[in-house]
Image 1 (cartoon, rainbow, N blue to C red):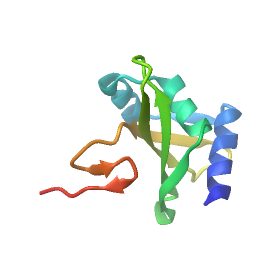
Image 2: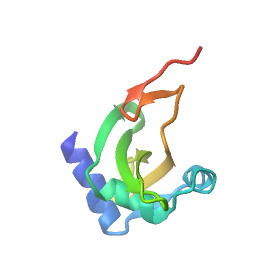
Image 3: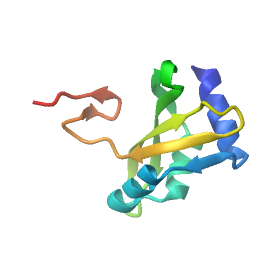
Image 4: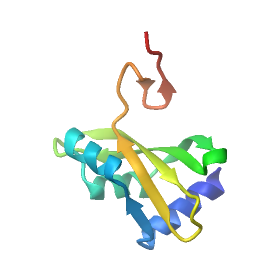
Length: 108
């Protein structure tokens, strides 16, 4: 999966990405911006889950909040277009859906 992550990072670095409305909604609600989103992808990140049939993956990265706190960020990337990556949604992982930033929780 490192090849896929490198492809996503290369497209983002070349400004060949689109931020979708669902990601924008989470930015507004959760207090991060496009710069934080791009820093999360461009920094030390990894693919947590790959949904190959949908040509999407879930990436875990981190950004620095306005309070100067290192925060995890999940980004769902659609890589179905070879020349562009869609950043479908992005959100700060929270309980009960996520026990840790990289481990899913359970809904009761």
